[in-house]
Image (cartoon, rainbow, N blue to C red; front, side, top):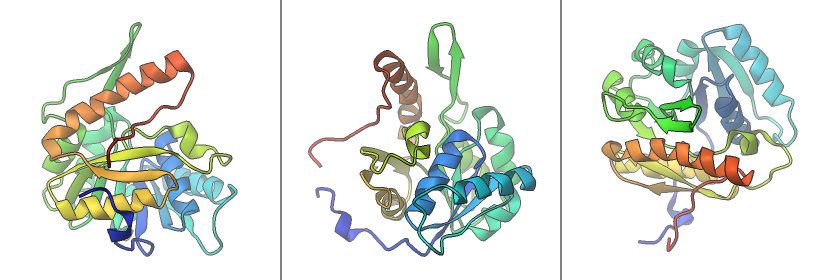
Length: 232
């Protein structure tokens, strides 16, 4: 069946938490979800830093009236959110996720972390014992509903108030087909985006690793490239 946005569920009432919401990717996603009308919680190890980032995002143009962007510690954000996006640096991924296993139980967890290294030749994919960042998250969160998504979205585009549309496909890997619709519906709240099922969690490694290729493309062509799947 071809992609049909009309079949997606209504996710407008969901509260979206961003763990790592003070970083570039987390802040950008928080801004776009808030701009789309979602209630957004910014999480950080420091509640003060989270509150500061939330206030800065709330002051950006384009947010609808009545939309709240608030900040709190990671544990509180995990407990209060319906959907939690993990957008932390790779080197702190395992420790951060493991510490939140309790409050994330039963929650939808969207991991967008890319395990990359950098040297003089540029970015490259790092080996992960579990196979990928999202598989590591799934192993640490046995009581959560885990998927990978938003790995290839440019942080500068997300954060730019002058950008109205971000034309790309969000590749979603998960063991639960129902999550594809929920996360796809969240992606579709951002103009220009589609959420596309891209296989089970074991297929996430190459999606995370492909971010290194996109960084090389962007550097060579001075662009903010994304992925678009054809014939859908």
